[in-house]
Each structure stands twice: as C-alpha cells, then as structure tokens.
Length: 589
Image 1: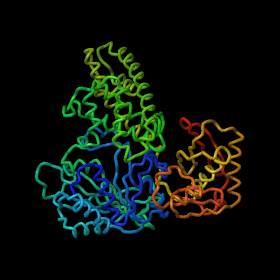
Image 2: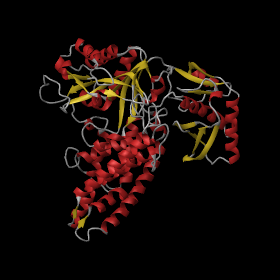
Image 3: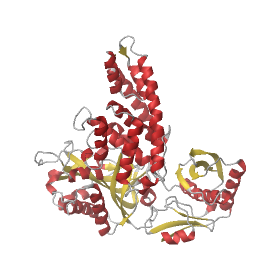
Image 4: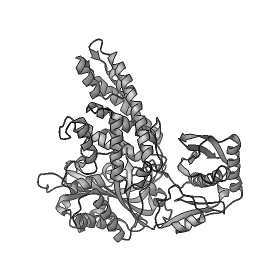
C-alpha cells in the first residue's frame, strides 16, 4: 500500500502500533488539565502527565494516539515551509514497559517497512552526555545494529538531544532524533544536522531521570518512552514536497486566499502572507472549537486566539482581500469541513466558532479604521518615526509592511530600522514576562497537588447537589497555591449558595471518606453515574475515582487516599469565565 495523504498516514501509524500491543487513545483537549505552567497542549505527553509520573492508565502501559497541539513559541517562525502553530503529533508511549532498544527498533520498522523510507536517506542523533548524565551509547549501539553507518549517527549536546522537564522539575531524559534527506542533490555520505535539507521527523524521548527542585538529575522510578512524529512534515515528504503548505492540509485555504486576492501563492511577494493566514486560521478554529470552547479575549488562551485572528486579518488586508470578516468565516467553514470527521468537536462547536470569529473580525475591522485615522495624523515632517510606527503596530495591529505601504502612497519615509529595534525590545519583554508567568515544573504528584485535585471532585459534586444536577466541569487548573474550576451555570452564585457549597465540601472532608480507584468499562461507569468532562474521549476501559458514596468521576489523578488528608476548603472567588460558564477559585488552608 502506498501512503500519500495525512489521513492515511495517521491510520497506518495507529494500526501499526496496535499490532505492537498499543491501545489507541483519543486526542485530548488543547488546554492541558495536568500542567498549569503552559497555555496549551504542546506535545502528546501533556495529557499523560499523571501516568508518566506513575499513575496507572486504564488502557495499560502501551499507548498511541494523534494529539492536536499548539505551540506559541513558533509564531514568529511561521511563514517558512515547515513551521506551524497548530499541528498534529503522532505518538506512542511506554509507561514503565519497553525502553530504548525496543522503542528504537519499532520506530525504525515503521519508517523503513511501513513508510518505505530508504535507510540511506535517514540519519539520527543521540545525546553526547554532560556533567548531569552519561553519553547515550546504548541508543547509538542500537542504531548501529540496525545498519546505520557511524557517519549517519551524530552525538549532540543537551540543547539538541534532551527533553524536559517542561518546567523546572519533573521527568526528563535523553532523546534520539530521526532525520530524512529532502534535498534534490544526492544524499551526502556524512550527516550534517546544520544542513536544512535534513528534516527532523521523529523524536524518541527516554525519560530515565527526574530533575529535582535543587537542580539534580536523579534516576526515575518509572522508565518511560515518549515519542513524537509530525504529521505535517511527514505528509510533505510522502508527497515529494519540500513545502508543508502544498499538502492537502493547507491547500483548500490557500486556494481560497488566491481566489479572493487574485494573487498567486507561487509569487514570492505573497507566499509568506498566505502561509501565515493558512496557519493562523487553522489554529484559531481548533482553539475556539476545542472541547473547552475558547473565546478571543485579552488573557491566556483567549489572547492567543485573538492574536491569530488579527494577524490573519492584517495579512488579508496586505493581500488586498476585501471584507476580512466575511473571508475569515469562509475559511473557518473550509477548515471545519476538512477536519470534522476526525475531530467531532469542530462540527459540534461550529456555530460558536463562526459567531466568535465574526465578532472578533468586525471588532478588529473597527480598530483598523481608527488606526488609519491615527496614521493620517502622522508624517507632517515627511517621516514616520520608529515610535509612531510601533504605536500603529502595538495599538492598532498594523504590521510594519502595511505602514510602509501606506507611507509610500503619501511619499513619506518610515524609520524601519528604529521600528525593528523597538520591536526587539518588545519581544524581549514579552519573553521575560512569559517566562515569569509560566515558570514552574511539570504538574506533579506533590501532596498539595493531590489535595487540591481531590478537592475539585468534592467541589464538583457539591455544586451539583446545591445548584443543579446538570452541572458539568468545563475546565480546571491547579497550581500549588490554588485550584480553579469552571462549570456550566447561567448566573452569579449568591453568598448563601457559595457558603452552602463550601460547607458541604468541608463536611465530606471531615467525614474522612476513602478515595478509591476502580477500573471499569464506560458502560459500567455510566450506570454508576460517574461524572466526566468529555463523555466521548475515553477508551474501552476507564479509571473511576470513588470518594465514599458521595462522588464518582472519571479521572487520571493524582489523589489523596482519604478526604481527611485535604485540610480546610475555602472559596476565594466566584466569577464569570465566559458565556454560560462560571469560575470558582479556592484554596486549602
């Protein structure tokens, strides 16, 4: 069978790993429940954090999936042939089961026997070792045994061949990365990782260490394998393309852009703008259409959605596309239609996506008009200063290219060099701010995390009993300082209701109820009345955490063994999160 399309690639991958005794699990939400240190699920491992830390998974020790991911660190890279903000990651995991040798051999088998990649077009890298951990000669020897010559295996330092931890602490370890030669010239005899024609396609991570708070790397109690293979890059390779945007994953959007702008993707003057629009619109649709339905806003995930939409509209304007609000809706419909069979949530949330997109596009359209009025006040001395250009960028969303184009029409100059300096300062401040905001470790099984996690179960059930049996979780986030819990409800809670919920939670804590984990089928869980945030996101077997006879909920953990361990529960704030969704922030005292 010749594999060509992304859909065929994904199905082949999952079927192959099922033949290796892996259980297929569904893609999780783009908003990670188990890692408060990041805004989005950036890799397939995020939803599996509790299980990488030792919690038993209901589907066993071998798993595989296609995980939807968003990485905001690549926003400024988008525009080239291979970078994306939203992408799909194929992954397979061993949770304390097989390790390096088997992982590498399975990866090699898939590449050479399933995808039929010739070994002479493949190269690999391994970790060279440092003061913290030893050189990965084991991985090196496995690759050699599979027929790789020494000049196609390169040892690289930690910045290239080490994964994690995601924050300051947690599981981490060396990785081995696989590269494919995409160049038109003959394959070089020696692998050069700096040669851009060698494209990284797969990464096998060996979690054999745990980084502690004091910076030490200790041997991990559970050895895990975590892998990631990029759907977009491999699809392009299978189709003989050196540009991911020429695959069927982006072409429907790009053809629509060409149609409405009357410009060609192959014209280098417009290629970058078209790539940015295609990438950012796909990301915005997936984030808004996620199970947790993220609206554009000025904070957290909503801010990123807003940035994607506005950046898309700016590039629409630079391409001369009329009525950007109408255009963004047309593109969103294309993307939903393209992915609806694989991600049912997009079709389910179609009206929400289109409504939010229309509102945001129209709102930004008005901002653009205000910005044009501001622009027309500038240039009295036949020059737009760096500060003026940056004001137009930061306050009104004008890219420097748009400011230059407008200025050229009036025959005035723009201090582009000064703008770029201002922009670099802005980027540095933003980076430092992000590092400060999200500094932390991978979600852990510390005592406070266990207490807060278990308290969310009690809170959810208390809300159902005090307010309405129809209440469902709409998201949660736990840090060492507090828990945050979102739920569907259409009004503000009264002081009396908040007190009643708080009292009920503390009553159950005082009753010292046992917390037990039981594995069962989804049907059994439903008969039991077990609660879950996403009913259609589970495999054949599920983990249900029972808190006495008070609460039963599908969950991954971690939890305390008895409610008496939690402490005193206190609601600090109750507020609106979005339309029809309320948010409670609470602490343990």
